[in-house]
Image 1: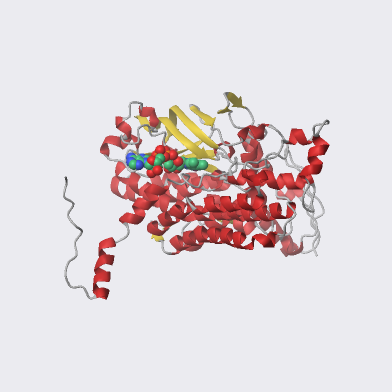
Image 2: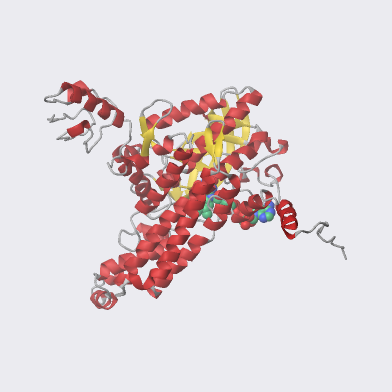
Length: 547
Ligand SMILES: Cc1cc2nc3c(=O)[nH]c(=O)nc-3n(C[C@H](O)[C@H](O)[C@H](O)COP(=O)(O)OP(=O)(O)OC[C@H]3O[C@@H](n4cnc5c(N)ncnc54)[C@H](O)[C@@H]3O)c2cc1C
């Protein structure tokens, strides 16, 4: 068996100890690519063939970013994120953002983990090199189903949303399909630019949030009619080398944990709103962009370090673009309003198919939390089998319906686009079933879960009465602390900061219903029913007489 004897630290590289390289894939820690010179770092005994193959694997795997590299990249960014009026200088340690960073970092842990790396990594179909899955192209049914699998796994690892691992991924694929058509009609080179960016994103293994939702202003008016044009992100200047944009995108997930942000138009536009038909990708810390993190339930708890809140989390941000210059190579739509509707169509089809996996993954954690609560309360979780099965059914309904939408989809311009009708149907269920799952979680857990109805961590540790509370809160066959951790998790999942926003996140259910309505041939069904019933005469809708 070849034995890798030693690695010597190089520059800022940490030394790694990889011993017992049996089959050449048994390494625990991966090196950063920078400055790596294999001839300097290893002394390998024995078999030359295995040695070469081991080095090849090592070279391939160092394409995959590590947690440490990810955190270092976030730390190096220009501070431009605020919360509570305070500028956050380091998103990896600040209490308002460190939990969402931790959530996203778990994707890199997954990539480095032998059992999970197939979920979190894949091979680039451009270069043949290993990459993070969320930087990949989704060209086949299998590719998009792997999106759903990864999202469910991310929820299982974090309990909540990690928008930076998925929304930008979807945006990149959607824009691949749309730029193909724009280029064909207008002779632009958007897809070539996008490919260059995707290759760079794959090489760096970056996380990318994505923003469609504008502040909008008055919902009954078009963007150009708004008293404040900044309610919607728009182009204010076109230059030879790029565009200048301003305006606001709001409620954007995982921005603080992301390296970059993909911007898409917020709706389908006509010629009067051509300036709002804009798509580009920019670094999160680009000059001129100010980011304000929003409030969420119980987010004040994040400022304390104790078990009143889990260690993972999600954030939503307002993005304020104040005359930001975007160079041409990062612009993928600049006024081609005719195609803005296509962006929304493809984006929602895939996003609303995959979002079924998100809520299913959170539902899996809610089932687990409910079982822990039952046991911590001193009751067998089997007593709640009917409720737990109902929760599981809700989870698999949205997951399965999403997969169904994917299976009924097809390739459009080289990317997989899910079936729109079934994807929107899924969004209708995503906006309802998880609330029932949350209700059941609260029902099983008891009043202590329903409103988080128990004293704070500080009270448990108060010298005067803390011990008294600790003794009386103990119930089942586990410590008081474990019971309280299960309480706080259940509360966080159902009414707290962990709630990912399944009602409007990914788009409002009414919009989804409109698509289902528009794509259902109701009159054809009436004709079919007539034939089955043997009716030969017309039965028209009664004419409504206006009074
Ligand atoms: C937790 C969370 C995470 C999110 N993450 C992201 C993200 O990462 N990226 C992103 O781009 N967006 C994100 N969003 C935004 C999300 O996509 C929007 O909330 C959603 O599209 C609805 O838009 P809105 O909130 O402006 O609702 P509104 O537009 O205010 O809609 C409110 C209600 O009014 C109805 N309505 C709206 N306009 C009309 C009209 N003209 N006529 C009749 N009815 C109307 C809607 O159907 C809805 O029922 C997130 C939202 C949440 C809550």
